[in-house]
Amino acid sequence: MSTVTISGVGKIYPGHGSGDEPVQALDTVSFEVADRQFCSILGHSGCGKTTLLMMLAGFEQPTSGTILVDGQPVGEPAWQRTVVFQDYALFPWMSVEDNIAFGPAMKKVPEAARREIVRRNVELVGLKGFERRYPHQLSGGMKQRVSIARALAVDPAVLLMDEPFAALDAQNRSRMQEEMGRILASDDPLVRKTMVLVTHSIEEAILLSDHVVVLTRRPGRVKAQIRVDLPRPRNEGDPAFVALRERIRALIHDEFEIET
Amino acid sequence: MYAAVLARVSNLGLLAAVVAAWWGGSTYLLDQSTRALLPPPQDIVAAAWELARSGDLWRHFRDSIRREFVAFAWATSAIPLGIAMGWWKSVEDQVDPLVEVLRPIPPLAWIPLSILWFGVGDTQNQFIIFLGCFFPILVNTISGVKGVEPNLVRAARCLGAGEARILWHVVLRAALPQIITGVRVGLGVGWMALVAAELVGANTGLGFLINDARTVLRTDQVIVGMATIGLVGLGIDRAIRGAVARLMPWSGAMRR
Image (cartoon, rainbow over the protein chains, first blue to last red):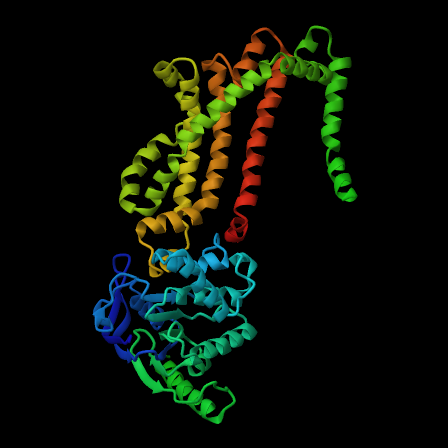
């Protein structure tokens, strides 16, 4: 069981110079992500959605409010909450298998068990045969697969993803979204995690999520929460998909007009 | 393959012309007394052969290279210091003023003081080489550590690595290409400093060899010593570059 509870979270960055106004990135954000649910945080760039994810991971602390995972406040970063970064953040001096084994090694998982974890995760993300490659020998899509496998290899309670497909070209992006959907359909407890995805793509949010949180522009507030009950695998051409997309687009567009 | 060899050979055209002009000038333009100041190339080759056969060249080379690497071994202390300075701001705040005072003093300016401190010989030479090596390694290590992608450190933290393991497994590795750059520059500066230190403060070594040959007007031996110094410097640099390409194939990809 891993429920994420965000209540009244605000984040204010102090101004740098004198006369430099403090910036309020987030304002009283509250929502909950149920156990093993996939939640997308959707918003314009600069709405504080990445800040929120970094606070979930423990890299930054909220100025006000609380973030709880299973009732416990989030403290320092820990393997219970791993992050998939937009720029992959793979260790360039390690092969694919060493990157994936890094977390288990830090957890002092014995060698044999570690090898088994690597094997399973390599298979999960479809990188069989590439175990000995180095990151600079892989395409962007493959690097992101390694990054997802590495994050899952420590068996975290919550998987956090910061625009994981934004740096990929359109073709690779839709393939990765499809694969992510396939991974999500699995009932394997090592794969089914509570997941939080930050994105600015409405389609990506609907394709993958059980639950979409739309944030307003700076300072980020919860504009709307939408349940996505469409059957999986989802199809962008499906009329229900299109209807939902238009609804969310209207919400975001509305937000845009208020701002300008 | 054939074309590549041809291209390499044709690149040596100007060098061959310069050697030919040297030979011609020395043989036909200079008279008996001035020729002693610039002997023709074949005399240099003969002197090199003589020095190599007597074992003198080897002895001086060995002493020089030993000083260089002993001093370098001490100078690698700049790597942990640089990592500490790049990682903890409090360490940098304390150490940086000291470094900023010492760094602009050229290693050669330390020679008189170091002779008074250590006398003539290995310790004094190594001290000067150490100064030449230390600061390039330190400066490059600090900037390498500061340039580590923040997300690499974040990824390691959320995968469960503590600070000590982050420093060892992530920061050191990520900064390694630039640390190696510092080592290359440091060994180069150290090698230059070594020759200067040996000119005035040694009884052996390649720097001593060329100064000693000067006092007896053995210009041919001076030039052999100079050529050896140049070739060894080049060899050290090539060896490091080769090792980097072999041991860190990812480093080129990292610099992007």
